[in-house]
Image 1 (tube, rainbow, N blue to C red):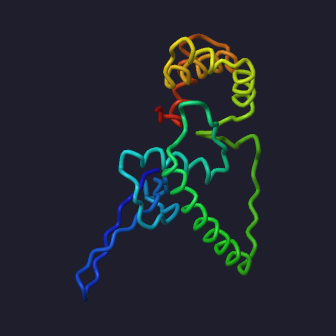
Image 2 (image 1 turned 90 degrees about the vertical axis):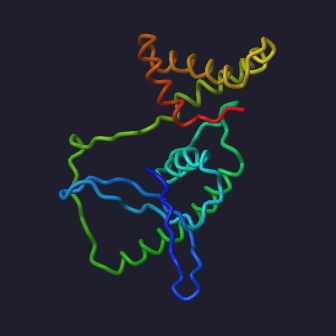
Length: 187
């Protein structure tokens, strides 16, 4: 997904208006196409915060909760922008669903053995690992040892990775790189 900036010009006044949309690339039989996921209005965040905005919007749209680990929180500006966008999104989605009810019902048969998922994120195992990490007061202990917020988060991620997916160190690094993709902002 990416954010597209759309400029429109008023023909009478010559004033240029800017709006933004969340876009995803979709494979079709005619090749890849762009599909608008949601209109964002005018995004007033700096462009360096857009990746965090996209990740948070994507997780909220898909219904995934994010872990609030120390040193990995999104800035308040990003969360506020996501809250505003999601309010509009749910209203638009509700309207689309209401309009669909007036048309004929569509029925789809799915063979569960053929269903695949991609970019899915688990939540339970990470939550348990984080709860134990907090119960053992590891953040305070690591802070006392002089660990930075980034180092504390990395430590927790590596320990959680070895607990959740106890494979080789290389596989743990692969697990943590996916985990850290969604938690990039460190103070």
